[in-house]
Image 1 (tube, rainbow, N blue to C red):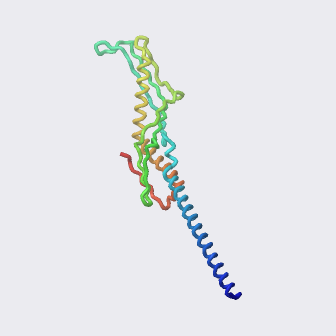
Image 2: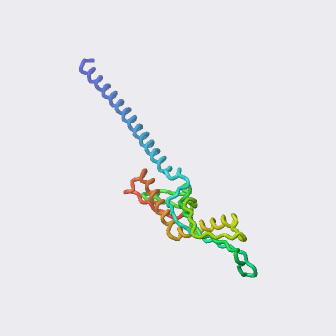
Image 3: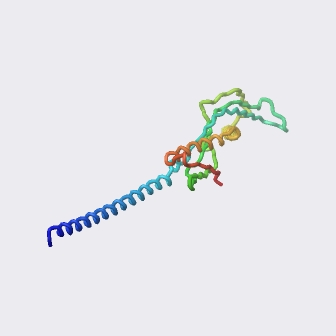
Amino acid sequence: MNTKVKKQKFQFIKNRFIVRILAVVLIILIIVVVILGIRKWFDIDSKTTKIGFEDIGELATQSAYCTEVNVMDASRELWGVTIPFTQSKYIYSYNIVIKAGFDFEEIEWDIKDTTIKVKLPETRILSSEIDRDSFKVYHEDESIFRQISLEENNEALNEMVSRAEEDVIANGLFDNACDNAKTLIKGFFSQVYDMNEYEIVFIDKK
């Protein structure tokens, strides 16, 4: 076999070897791309199934401060007529702090195409606290013949808190708490999704 034929044969074998190496490298690159692609998809999926508000629990999204004036009037009566010198009367006020919000663990959401549907539970009062330091007395008159008991005073305070809750709800406490919660939730989603591409739709949870 002459030298020229040997060189051609060697070149042919060399070319086949190079082609096989390139094929193997190409296959490895494809596998790496697929693995990275899958890993990236799983990373994204793990984020979208765990939004920050799921770890919050109860969250107050609105506070209301109001002053309630209470009148306690007690006396002894005989046949429907107040007995003289047996009347006790107090007029006083307290500031009451009422917080409303959600149990964020009850929020449900799902994604379809570019729409994120969020189901919100009912807004509710989370706490109602009397500010003891705000106590003011406007009138104090107690008869030794008809003193107001601690039980009556406690009942009056409970009624005062109930009135305060009704007042702040009537003045938009729940509406404001819901609006603030929506703003907060949008902020959580914006950390994971591009809000220019996704739309958030809020639905009342039945």
